[in-house]
Every structure is written in C-alpha cells, then in structure tokens.
Amino acid sequence: MSAPRFDAEARQGLAMVSPPLIYAILLLAAPLLTILAYSFFKDGYLEVIREFTLENYRAVWTDPVFHKIMLRSLGVAVAVTLATVLLAFPVAYFLSFVVKPERKALWIFLITIPFWTSYLIRVFLWKVILGHNGVINSSLTGLGLIDEPLGFLLFNVQAMVITLAHAYAPFAILPIYVALEKIDRSLLEAGRDLGESRLMTFWRVTLPLAMPGVIAATLIVFIPTIGDYVTPELIGGGKIPMIANMVQANMLALDNKPMGSALAITAMLIVTVVSLIFLFFNRRFLRVQQ
Amino acid sequence: MKGGGLRAYAIAYLIFLYAPILLLPIFAFNSGTIIAFPLKGFTTEWFGQMVANATLRRAFTNSLIIAVSSSIMATCLGIFAARASTRFNFPGKPGIMGLIMLPLVLPEIIVAMSLLVVLLAIGVQLSIFTVILGHTLICLPYAIAILSTAFNSLDKSLEEAAYDLGETKWSAFRLVILPLVMPGIVSALLMSFTISLDEFIIAFFLAGNEPTLPTYIFSQLRFPKAIPVIMSLGTVLVVMSIVLLTIAEYFRRRGVARTGQKDHGGFL
Image (tube, each protein chain N blue to C red):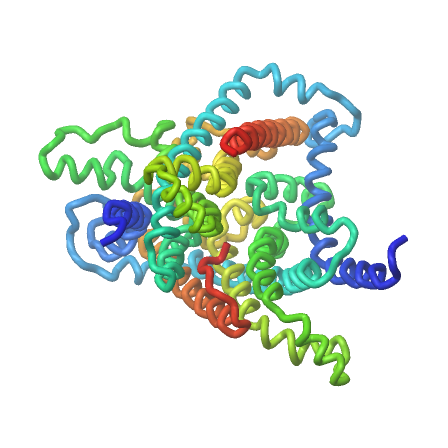
C-alpha cells in the first residue's frame, strides 16, 4: 500500500474519470466485446445461436473473396498512406522551418479547415470531378481535346486512391509538423558546423528526429483509410468493395452477424499486426540511425 | 525569400486541398442542371429549392438536435476526463484514457457496426437518440484533446490559493478554474458540434428512418437531377463549418492568451 495521500488522490481521480469511463465502457467496450463474442457464435435464420464455433473464422480465412477484398483494402491504404505522407512532409517542413512564428497558427488553421468540412461532400466532389460528365471530361471535350468522355477516370482503384489521399491529406501534416517543431535547432547548426552539407544534415539529423511524427502520420492515415466505407460506395461505384463494405454487407444485407463480426475482428487484427510490424521496423530504423 | 521553392509547393498543396471545395459554390450558383463546364448562368434557384424541400428541412432540424445534444454531452464528459487526466494520478490511468480515446483510431464503421449490433440485440428503436449516443462517443476524444490543453495550462497554485482563502472544492472550481478553461470549453463545444454535423457513417447506420443532412445528401447522390441542390446544400454546410471553426479557433487562442502560454497553433 502506498501513502494515504496517494489513495485519496487516486480515489478522487477515479471518481472524476468515472462518468466518461462508464460511457466508454457501455457504448464502446461492451459493443466491441459483443462482436467479439458474436464472431464465435453460429448464425441461425434471423437469430444468433449462442454456441461456440470457429467456423466463421475458418470461412473467413479460406474465402477467396475475403482475400481479394482484404488485399485490395491493404493496397489502397498503403498507396494512400505513401502518397499523403510523402506529399505532406515538405509542407510540414515548410511550416516548421520557413514560416514565421506569428504566421504559423494561420497556416495550420488554413490546412485544417478542409479536414473538418464534410468528408462525404469532399468524396462526392471527386465523383463530380472525375465522372462521365464531370469537370475533367466536360472541360476536355469543351476544349476539343477529346471527342468521347474518358471512361477510365472513375469507378476504379486509382480514383479511390486519389480521393482518399485528398481526403486524408491534412491528417499527415500535423503530426510531422509537431515532430519537426520539437527539434532543437542548435542540433542542425551543429551538423552544419561539423562540415555536413545541408542535404546530409537533413538526412542524418532532421529526418531521424522527425521519424516519430512520420510514424504517427502513417498510422493516422493508414488505419482510417483501410476502414473507409464511403469512397468505395461512391467513387468505386459499389462494384469494388473494400473491407468495410464487406463487413456492412454481411451484418445487414446478408444478416449474418457472426460472419460480419468475424470479418470485422479479422480485419482489425490484420490492421493491428501491420501497424505493429511497421512500428517495429521503424524502431530498428531509428536505432540504426542513432 | 527564404525557402521559395518550398513556399510555392506549400501554396500549390493548399490549392490542391481547396480546389474541390471551391467547385461547390461555383455549381451551386450555376443555372445548368448538369454539373459540367462551361457554366451556364447565375441563379439562386437551387438555394430556393433547398429551402422549400420538406425532407431537407427535417434533416436539418434532426442534424441540429443531434449536433447540439452530442456536443454538450461530449464536452461535459470531456471536462471530467480532461480534469482527471491532467490533475490526478490514479491506477490504470493509461488504460482508462486509452479506452476513452480509442474512437480516434478505430475505423468509424467498426464503432457503428458494433453499436448497431448491440442496440438491435437489446431491442432499442433506432432514432436520432441513438445517433446522439454514437456521436457523443466519437466527439469525446476531440473534446478531451482540446480540454486537456486548457486544463494542462492551469497553475495548480491558483487553485490552492482559493482553498487557502476558504473556498470549497466546488466554489474554487466554479470561481477560479472554470473561467480560466472557459475558452477551451467553448472551443470543444464548437468542434464537437462541427464533427457531429458532418458525420455520416454513424448517422447512416444508427438513425433508422430519420434523415440527417449527410445521410440526406448520400441518398440524393444517385439522382443527377438532385445534384445542383446538393451543391448548394454543400456550400451552406461548408460555410457553416468554416464559421464555426473560426469562432472555435478564436476562443482557443483567447484561452491560450488567458493562461499565458505560447501559441503552438492548431487543434491537434
């Protein structure tokens, strides 16, 4: 037992945190545990039979459709993550190293505004831009550059990657910016004083120190994109589903809740494993750099 | 100028971020029924149709009720969590805070599906009330993030001075802490309101037959004839979000100034 003062503080702290905690337990932990339990149950017609089985997981893992959709989701998420993080890094660098301190808040505000404006509308606008009679096609035919509207713009994986990369762009800038801001500027001067070129200083000092931000950015973009529901519906035209659409179809349209739950749990496991592998490699990368 | 190339790139990036959104007002005021260039002429007809649409008005009322309720609930719960995590040490703190902040990294579809399964299993009728429950859950981490900054900047000695001067716990909170964190609270309210107003996935699955603005938009996207009205609705929503965020940013900065911190900018 620790000192009584700590006990009083611990009690007070727990009492203070209990309303949001109870809320999170009831509306988040309990539902997540429920789908975990469902994933081990059997599906009866219109009801869930509470009988332990691994059949759902066996079905998920041996289903070629699941393999295809999971691989597609991973592929899209990796492409989107690469694009957003690579494109965002120079902007974050600019914000941290070039912009004057009193102007930083304004720049960050400008970058975050699109992030908070209706996600659905931003996705839908890409449909407007890329569509058969969309902005690009109508402009090109109007200018006489093409006779027929280009059909390859919409309803494919590339269009989904472009849309998602645009939708999640601001997510990547902020964590990288925060990491860059934390870098002690005298370290960079030291690098230059010791005879490193600007490029080498960047490579050997700035980049390794910015790595935690890059990792955070990668995960912040990767996790929501892999679970995206709207973009495959609108931009993919519903014909190229990702894992979220498959989960939804099983839960509602096919009304096979155990199967839907097993899919959701499996997808979450895969995302967790991929994230952990990524974190592990980055830890190694960081150690090598040091 | 220093970093000329980087500056040009950053500006190009901003244009890329905003370009699709700029299409909204362009086509909302365009008299052509097809969303395509070249533009036809200027009209406010789509805005007129938008206001006259009964389902849309219902969706708007629903969205307002949901956004107001869930922002208040999320901010109230957020005050408890932010206060607890910045002021007290208690056992299991990382795990508890981790659970509360989890919706930040969980795909929304998982939150929506698991809630839906449970609500259906215990026989709760889907309505705007169930959407409020879900929105409170996902707004809570954002509210906590903003409120934690506000509570973190508090000087503990101010509170202790209040106790020494004979204030009770509650009166010290009301007279000393609350005024200092007020800008943070306003900022958290506005931010939660904006998130809830724009949120689609949870509203889509938990609202039953009740429309909200985003689910109404989604239902109309299949009909090419409805698109101009959706463009004008989108314009209104984006303008509303920007106004709300600007006010939220104003309060956040005031809070930063009031507690005498250096401004790092940004909500995250």
